[in-house]
Image 1: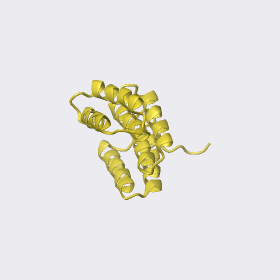
Image 2: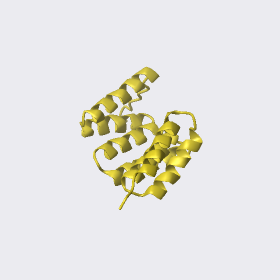
Image 3: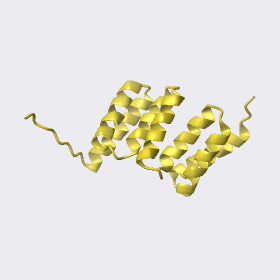
Image 4: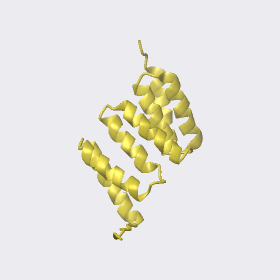
Length: 134
């Protein structure tokens, strides 16, 4: 029988990995960011955060459809993820679908009215009000 590896990173190590992935994403090293976030997702398969972060990589590389797939998968893992709803709303807005964007952003705001994702949703809703699509 083959040996089976078990890895249980500490919270500090997990944060370090996520920060590394974010640095790769911001440096536009999208494949390295995908690898890091996918790896963290394997370590924590029931956690929505790595899936949302994978979506942000796709969003930043202009793959809005793939980004939304990741955000929806995150919502399957955690239907109350303001993080996923805020990013799903952002992606919908960039696809010029204001109504869908508003629906998702309102969900984020309801779930996290005073937190970081509620604030993100509020800013995006304000932006949606100012943007005119032809």
